[in-house]
Image 1 (cartoon, rainbow, N blue to C red):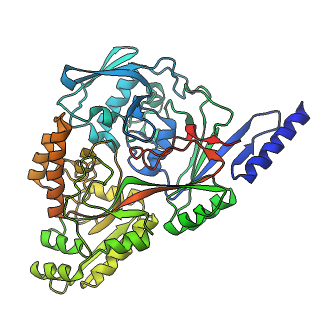
Image 2 (cartoon, one colour; image 1 turned 90 degrees about the vertical axis):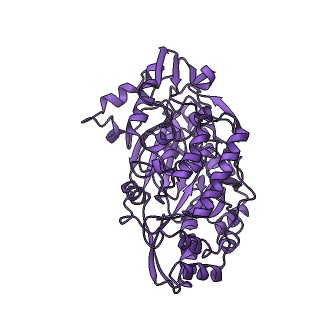
Image 3 (cartoon, rainbow, N blue to C red; image 1 turned 180 degrees about the vertical axis):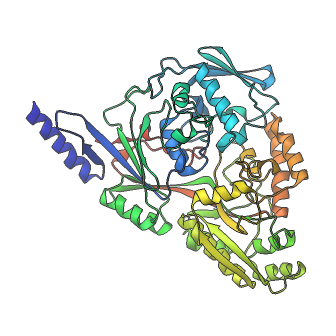
Length: 533
């Protein structure tokens, strides 16, 4: 028997090694084996606390170890149950009753129930970071009511049209074990210090270890309620590999089985490798250049218009992105309902930019700008193209690469003097409604304190207009509001809206089960991935 098992394991090692899948044998042949998926990612986990995480690398880990009541199904906007089995809307949409799944365990062995839902949502709202901004306009500390151990009600403080879509967001609310959180709570911190690199979820995987800036190791939770198949990955390692060429090499060599965000050149090369599958799909990820509207001379709208004409949009899409993008038309991506195809669109026109700068009192430029970008290649390329255009206007533009932590910490200060003049930013949908693009990035309520209005844009007329969309259940009427809001933003120009990007993922051809959902972008359902045998 022992000899037969050694031969079987050896055969699996040869088979899976040849197809690019890593199989690690832990312990002796008499012990268990582990199918290990190595995911090479350009950025690293910042914080695995689901009430705080609001960046793609962090949410990537969060989605693997936590679950919500509902999520998006397959590749579309349909909502499907997870920790809830069903739900109904009562009192004209002001009350939502969720019936909970029984028999689910947290990673600490405690049982999932309605008290855990209330605890998690109360904590989420109290901390007020991450995706909480999506809920604060219509929930408060009294909103979550336990009906019985398997039933919970969420009572809205005011009408909110896309409630169930918001509940499916990959930015929360996620459900945590109250026992695990309370066991590690210190000095009123609600367990945040411990949860940064540990977990208290019900998800398929649990965090085994974190080496900050380098890797996250997650292992299968044996009591996961969905169960396990022999071809599931029982360990997932997310390795931080900023260099796109290195990520490509790891995939080609079989040292990684999944890479996301390869450069356009590397994506083209990977498509020619029969051992690798490249998934290339338009997504709802915008790339923006955010302007500091409270720092001179960018306080002047005419200057912002001039800068909007200083970017070579066509060159970025066709040369820098090699066609893996389309030029954006305003703040909402073209795949999202409510996008306005008639919206005015800026183009690369240096003469027009010079004319506008002269009108604003800067005929020769003669001012400087600091441009920040994160570690992603497309952000770096965008910053360089913007810099080149600005230099032709007489603007002394300097580029600096920063970490996500440094950028978001600076945004949270809401201090225009501490913030750069401009920075690159992705915006990806939290949920399937344009409100998520128009509210958190541009509402004055989202300046500082965990908000993401990094341009410090403050327009009372805009906020009043957007406020009418919150309680409007009629989608046609919401679209009319959203179109007015889009036009107002394009005219005020707090951002340069560069491109709607493609989702590009390289994966070993021996890994199956990947489905891209544009409402759950830059994350993966690792439990759904399988080894092709």
